[in-house]
Length: 263
Image 1 (cartoon, helix red, strand yellow):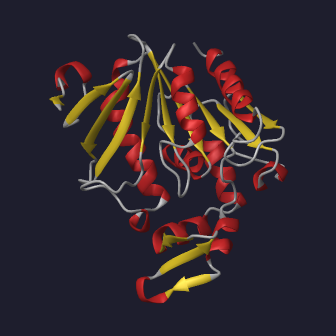
Image 2: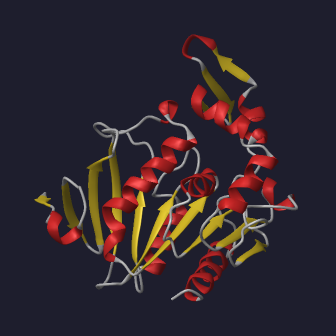
């Protein structure tokens, strides 16, 4: 591994190394947790996209990897794990959505200053984390089937409470565990709370809902009360992860069209 040239990157990273067009990086967040990520870049760019994955997911999800390869022609693309099995990283059980929002802020503080334009993509809970972070100076955001009115997620996880560790379990063939902090914060993000996040947000918002997912049926989403240019479209035939048919192709094309409005 090769040490970062901090004065060139303007970041607080510890190490990086290159693999084809992907540069792996890691650094310690403001509270000392290790954050691991990947940067995709073909050539020097003056615009960057930062991606925030959803609950129980990671930066290598199908749509995220597709997006990194798709956008690297024109943007530097940053992905990172909100929790990771490597040394010093967070465990999901210890996270809240506020933890995710703060980690996004740390990532942008580390990497975004060298770019004229900064765009964010958030999927599912990652979309909610983007809204909570509400970072000044972000050019525009695209939220992929974002979680809205999160009380529904809380109800799903409340079916089984693992009392000895104060965790909440959801059985999807493999049981998934959520910590008390995340569980309780989801319960506080009601329709009204999400409306407030929308009205207070400082950047233009695109919402791309998946037709076959729960939130597509909602009248409102995070675009609804935003004071900046905002749109919503439904990707037909898509599941929550945009893996069906050509739904991921359409997702990326619509995201690209939105971002290009602000270049």
